Length: 385
Image 1: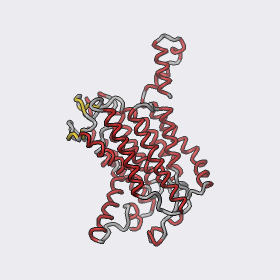
Image 2: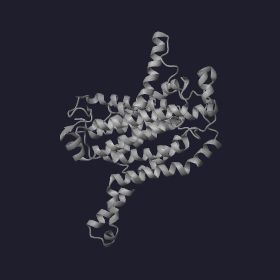
Image 3: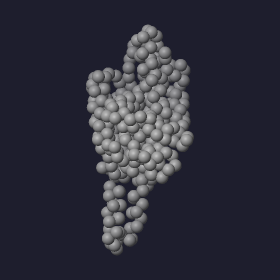
Image 4: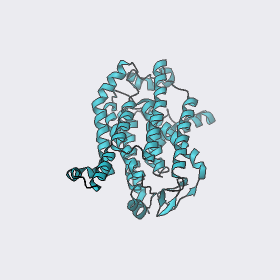
């Protein structure tokens, strides 16, 4: 909406309209930095102000978070038993505020903004069904893993196909040379690593599914997922902004450039603000949980943004906490099936440290610290050569 106001003013100013001369400040609305900042403030304020109302509404609907029994998780039930009944599905305040901010501050028809927002909304709907099933059945088991994976695959393939067909062989460039979206890149190399061709579609879908589930696994402690989301989204907002400016991308940093990618900063900064606002209510002791409604959607959106910015491999570094959480589950399951032994006291790994004596707040803050440094390392790699 704000950008439409700018274009309306620009056309009027070019036509010599007298009123346009008195509203020259509307020229500021063309700048991504201003609109991204407004989006961040807007989502933060919306989450903080309307959060209590959302929480009361969730409580009235009796959508409390089911906690796994002592038979299932043993000592962990003693640590988390007091959280039973805390309202879940709090991710709706993140999703709603981000979508509203994108419509107001962003350019929703920008292809990268559109596909990232669609992934966010689609996976939030899947997460909502999962949360609703858990609440309805009063069990920690929601939608079956196969059903969830199927719909994640559908969303991932649709998003990847759209990006592959929309960009084709045009739009991107690397060091002033044309770059296909199917060509894999990494900041340490000024040339593409290799061209995946049409195989980039399943590859991108796997990234979206993997990140979606990784954030979901991270969402096990008060404020852990939302705090890590802030650092990852902020890092990619910076990357997207740089990738959308030809001098910074092609002449200085030597990273993939696309004129439309910069607009993703508005979406990502809206996510940063919404996560800060949600953290206001979700910090220990949490008054509301994000639930799969938020975590599945956020993970998928971050992965899509990384793909759009052509920095999908960098997500392993910037989102290291998410990767670490997912790897701990994979290693734990693999070790138990192959050797009959567990590597960790419990997975995901944040529960391992809890059972080893770390207080919940210690685990959360230390993981935040790791996330911050991971994001800084990822950003530093942009200008390593």
